[in-house]
Image (cartoon, rainbow, N blue to C red; front, side, top):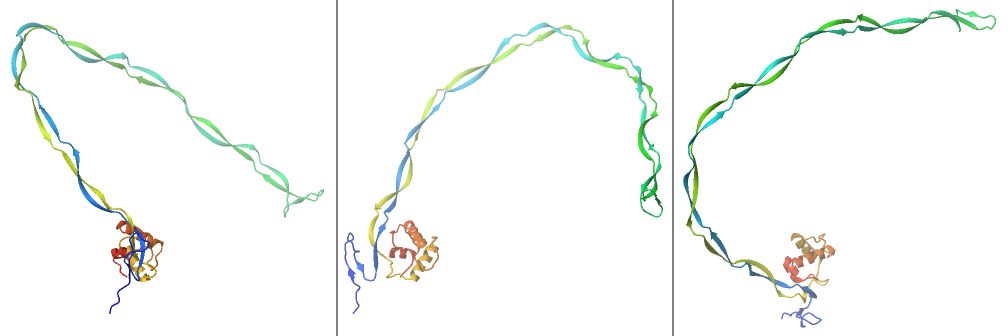
Length: 301
């Protein structure tokens, strides 16, 4: 005979979970509100009319009209002038004397400023004289003459004069010269005509109406189906949790793109944060690690 698991019955609003099964843990968790997408047709532009005005149409005809008759008149043809240029002597050619200064060069020479002489100096050595009065050794030495380098200017070429030719100077002058004298001539003035445009009405002005239909847009709204509520749900607790189960949950969270931290079989702060984020994104009950969350992750006890 198979032994049935003990069941405990309680109201969902009571302090105990309803239809509890022995060996399972339960906790009150927040079940998020549920929504459904509803498409709604919204009026964007009301129906209206567009009026097109067709203007009156005119036709133009051309007519040639005599404005001035042909005539003959005497006309003075003025003299014709041209500009000519010519060279005018302003100053004749001449000569002038140009002074060419003397040229010099610098010459250096040695000038003796002190002649050579001999003098006695104190010293020691084989060729010496001893002063009987003092007992000192004295040497007679030659002192060479002293020279100084002196620079002076020496004339190379003397100053002279030279003749320079100054060419004649001309100015260019422009002169207006008559090349054709004024004269009288008979000129025929042709008749003048003017083309006149005449405007004729071809069709009357009119209007044309076009109906513009209403414009609608379909939008998607989220309609609430049920409010969020607190419910009893089967959860993992120390009674039915093993490190192996926790590792599988951590691995499943990581595979789905969440960050549960190190896969070590311990429910730490990072694992709880990743779990809460997954429950919120999946619209699952938040607050505890429920069996439904495990089923969503594909993890079984």
